[in-house]
Amino acid sequence: MEWAPIHKRPEDYSGANLVDYPAFAADFSWNDARAQLDGLPGGGLNIAHEAVDRHAAGEKADKIALRWIGRDGETRDFTYAQLARETARFANVLQAHGIGNGERVYSLLGREPELYIAALGTLKNGSVFSPLFSAFGPEPVKARMTIGEASALVTTASLYRRKIAPWRQELPGLKQVFIIDAPDTLPEGTVDLTTAMADASDSFETARTRPEDMALLHFTSGTTGRPKGAVHVHEAVVAHHITGRLALDLHPDDVFWCTADPGWVTGTSYGIISPLTNGATMIVDQAEFDAARWYRILQDQKVNVWYTAPTAIRMLMRIGSDIVKEHDLSALRFMASVGEPLNPEAVVWSEEAFGMPFHDNWWQTETGGIMIANYRAMDVRPGSMGKPLPGVTAAVVEKGEDGHMRPVAEPMTVGELALEPGWPSMMRAYLHEEERYNKSFADGWYLSGDLAMRDADGYFWFVGRADDVIKSAGHLIGPFEVESALMEHPAVAEVGVIGIPDEAAGEIVKAYVAIKKGHEPDEALRKELLGHARKKLGPAVAPREIAFRQNLPKTRSGKIMRRLLKARELGLPEGDTSTLESDEK
Ligand code: ATP
Ligand code: MG
Image (tube, rainbow, N blue to C red; front, top):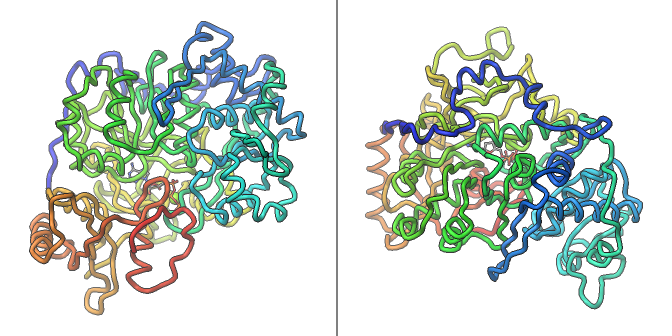
């Protein structure tokens, strides 16, 4: 189906950070972006200085940097000045326990205030921060802490007992474990962080890190296989800062809410660093997804900019738009989405429900920051990821006859989405996996592993992950297209599409469908969906089979794991499922 573009009105442009986008983009250089930051007094670059200390030393000292909302609705505010002092305390605690430059400090925490303090305090100390999902089991925790040679960990007593204590002696390099909720009996071999912080000085001279010093270690979501540890450096802050302005339209006085779990890269790049370098107030909600609660937060906290993910948006769609209208969301100015393809259906729905669309944007753990986006001053083509940001060169590439990668000649040709290396937040390595890292580059391009198309106007369209694309009777079928067509049916809540082997066609398309409440997963619905898909997509692309599911297997960052649907379908080993959220087989 052809989706009409969403044309922006003049008021959508007014005050946008990209009013005159083409001219701005033509003039843009990463050096200009760097010039918006301070650098350390006396030389060097440190993310924590840019995010916190420079604001704490200026006009923003008493402005709320972080507003934390507890599960029961209580709030805790930290001004920039307070955040500067708390992070200094944490850095002093690390020093006191012999944890220095370049050493890896992990967190295994939900959205607790200590997580934000630890992240920034770690960077202040010149150490490397690596966040883990608090819902990980002991094995994925152990694997990631081993790869990164963890020196320290910040966690809760209960998480420690269940997930680290059983194997701790196998990681002798782990010098200290800091417990944020030290109960009366502190687990053996751990430190009570609250007391240690209270005893520590609240001033600290930020480590004089250089732009190329390692700052962050982020593990990929593991959607396609074994997760990789992507290394990012302090220089990345240049991209975190400017992409927040350009792609999320973050202004210094905004209230910003990024709903991402702090266990993956979005939770750091845009859940901590970008809003703070831009001097905004960031909202952190301790609780998990709950539609009514989310609308209340958007209303009560007067959120201006909201950054979330397709899984959440699809859940909001299930509930409908009446609830949106019952809230005063007049402060909301910009909404964006990342993590998975955003179905055009969802974009059109949001435009109707909120009076503005969700703006999809694309990036990866490896890219460290947003690369392609529907920015504010731009018409949105529902289903498109948008256009490359200033400073980013993106292309759709294919292997030429000479065996080298080159941009495809014609618009709307499927190829691999590639980027020209050189932006500040580009990963510098997959830790201890040089070969895997080197494989991501060819002929001057960074190869993303995603397939996409570029239209004649420069908009990029996601097709699927290279591993997920289906070859059926000579057609190349992107699962996203099939999923989006099924999503248009009113009974459908969520879809995952895979190819299954077929003698005649090579592969045929099979769809796993979760349906909305009030519909029956029966033969009649199956026939109706098959008919619907055939009408929308044509018989060559439409699914041949449909299976109903309560829910689909997803990573903890909310991505549908198509490889798992396939492995189960074929009775093959499930591979690395360390990031799998509970699901129904
Ligand atoms: P792994 O690399 O371990 O398989 P992963 O690729 O899911 O896991 P992330 O780096 O968290 O790990 O996710 C980046 C990927 O998410 C992108 O390569 C892309 O496949 C998908 N993605 C992110 N944003 C979008 C988007 N806006 N549209 C389509 N796909 C997206
Ligand atoms: Mg990936």
